[in-house]
Image (cartoon, rainbow, N blue to C red; front, side):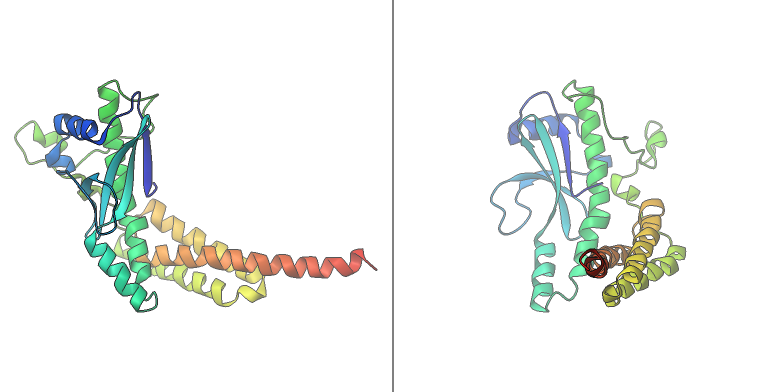
Length: 241
């Protein structure tokens, strides 16, 4: 899943046409209501907006032969980012984690549902690429029971995963601190990414695992550059006796 999902359709829609299509087909009880507007200050155009997290919204807009769903910060998110910048970036990791963790999951769920609507209407270009989510309570809806909501499907890692998530964070930080060692830093970065992915992909979102993945990637690249310089530096004298 990504912060930007693209659905290819057979025709080009205006924003109003897309809004009218959603008004006709969208299940507001299971997939939430939507409005046309700007997610926050500085937005230059209107979007169809759906709720995602406390500080993020999923914004839908048409382009030529496609519809795009993107995670954007709302007013609360913009305030959080601005406050983080004033503190020298302190706290930005939590905001980045919310965008790339929870909000991205919601974006993927909305994209799968919208794609299914286009497919049923004969507007989808090609075959569906996403599996439509099964929302808790759907089977009871026909019998008069209360249906669930798509936001209930956002996956959080269980508390048991916190220990291994912290381990990935520790390894990621070590890969940053020890990047000058080259190969050891590379190995620590790979280990941090591998452990973090095991949580994020298989168990759900955990902020420490996301931070460990982030630090591990930076540490891996920095260590790889140092390792490359060291290896090349050792080889050159041998090649030029």
